[in-house]
Length: 422
Image 1 (cartoon, rainbow, N blue to C red):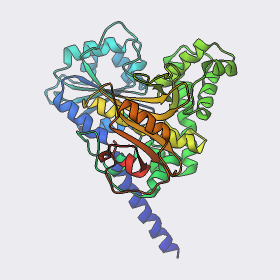
Image 2: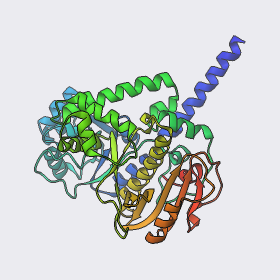
Image 3: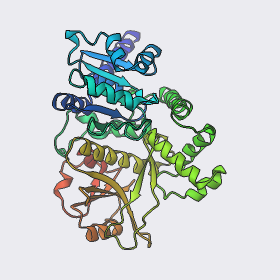
Image 4: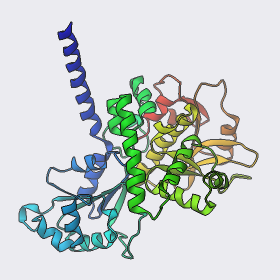
């Protein structure tokens, strides 16, 4: 009996290793490889902490030099300038030409844009340069030197349904539908889409991982990258957002709860967005009578933190849509944006994707199946003339049909719809 138990453990271990190997071959690996082959510009790779930026970057090329600002010796070499960096790492050798250089967390350096501009202008034709960071690299402008035209930005997201099925890059918007084990959706909802806790699928590990990541965001990133002194208060704001995910944002109410000004609330929310704790979805109002125009809704990058079941369902769909919007835009398929719809008579649809500023996909999220299509979905579909309008049902069983072949409002299982995205 003991031998059979040990054999079973070994089989599970081998299976998990195989799964981890498959999943770490992420869709972004091909995307970044293509960039470095086809473009002279630097690749800026940003995304939340522990989403897999460094792992994906290191898997691109075996001939890689990894330089991390958080490493003291690397930090000293960076601050001494581009020429010193080349000499310190022997990059002027013939066998180093065309090497991939990864500069990680360099945005923490006050003169990082000035350094990159000088490095790229002098050595950009000699090396492939990839810059990674856990803050929005196109937001933090610490110097007056512009990097315009010298980089392309890529935004990495947590694992999604489609990426657990396919790891290959796609050059079109929509995939063919594909079924997948139901446990994948359960684990994504429970443990989130960050690779390590999702792959382990262990509650005790997840609890420790979540606590460590929270400490890193608030007691390292907020401290290092902002002037905020009241870290406990901005952490409290983040806690409030967990319970108000997907709701209309009331700045005055947040300010009152925290005993701070409305302007401070708005500034702190921008900081939390820039550090990839949350993201905002704003109302779409073009050609929408009596539409809301200002109030955003906030969702979390780690949807597993959302305690309410219905709100978590809405958050996971929002995150899948945002990942698709960012991916399609970053690979150059067009200009895609994510909104929600609501008018002053309280008609509302959860999400709208625009393509090149034209309404394209409407999405209404339901935790359970309903007998009929939401009348609000039908209303906004008619007045905006969007190509697609989906009522996504989280508990629906997979249907092997291309839901994007339908040009009218339709009920769709989440498993089918999400499998067709990125």
